[in-house]
Structures are given as C-alpha cells and as structure tokens.
Image (cartoon, rainbow, N blue to C red; front, side, top):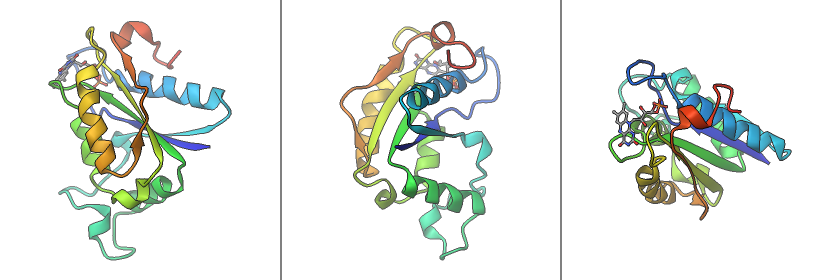
Length: 163
Ligand SMILES: Cc1cc2nc3c(=O)[nH]c(=O)nc-3n(C[C@H](O)[C@H](O)[C@H](O)COP(=O)(O)O)c2cc1C
C-alpha cells in the first residue's frame, strides 16, 4: 500500500521550543508504515509552494495550476490512504494542514482511509484537535478510521528521527 503522511506543521520559528515537533511525529509515522511493508511518502507544507493567494488546484484550467499543486494532486489520487499528522493550535487542527488540504477536490481522497495522528507539547496530545479533524476529513471524502493516535509531550516521547 502507498500512504501519504501529511506533516501538519509549517512552523519554522521558536519559541515555543523545540521547533516543529511535527517533523519527529511524521518521521515516526513513516517508520511505522514502512516497518509494515508499505510505502510512506512525507508531504511537508514547508516544501510546497501553493502559489501565494489561495486558489485551489481544481480552480485552475487543466494544466495551469502551479506545478507543485499538480504534482501533489497526482500523489493524492495515486495514494491508497493517508496519515494526517496535526499539532493542536488553540484546541483546533493545524491551519497549515487545513490550508494545504483545501487545495484539492474531495474526489481525489474519496473512499480511502485516513489516520488521525495528533500531538502536542503538553499533556493532552492534541485530542481536542482530533475531534474536529474527523468532520474535516469526512467532508474531504476520505474515511477517518476509528482508532486515533494522540501523542502528549511529543518532545519527550520521540527522538528527532522519530524513534
Ligand atoms: C499558536 C499555537 C497554539 C497552541 N495551542 C495549543 C493547544 O491548544 N493545546 C496544546 O496542547 N498545545 C498548544 N500549543 C503548543 C504546541 O503543542 C507546541 O507548540 C507544538 O510544538 C506545536 O507543534 P509544532 O512544533 O509541530 O508546530 C500551541 C502552540 C502554538 C504555536
């Protein structure tokens, strides 16, 4: 199976420290997926130039969207499922993740499983953000699976390489 692991944080600053806990959480997800014999491809919002002012990939004429959007659209279509990794920001899912996902039409995600993985530097592991993600991912067309992962104090639970 071919999974996309979406890294929900686009934070590139401190404080709070350490910078971008999400990198280690996404790395942990990639390790777990590959350890089970599947393919995991990391999708990092910091590496995807969405083209400035918000314009969804599906709003462009065929072949006119920014190349990174077309490339990710193809990856989403070809994937068998998704791992959505999100920090909790003010009890909600990551705006960076929502923004990135909003660029793509629901039919690309349709009927494919999605895992919700949340984390935080504090003690609740992003559980409150996760509840909102269920509705968001359902509307996006993919099927959030029942089991969820929440990682409190991710800076203590995981090493930088996801171990
Ligand atoms: C704007 C903002 C809002 C936050 N809100 C919460 C919150 O509601 N609950 C929580 O447990 N942690 C919250 N935190 C702390 C995050 O868990 C912590 O900064 C974590 O490192 C964020 O993930 P990231 O480093 O991958 O961006 C917040 C952090 C920021 C920057």
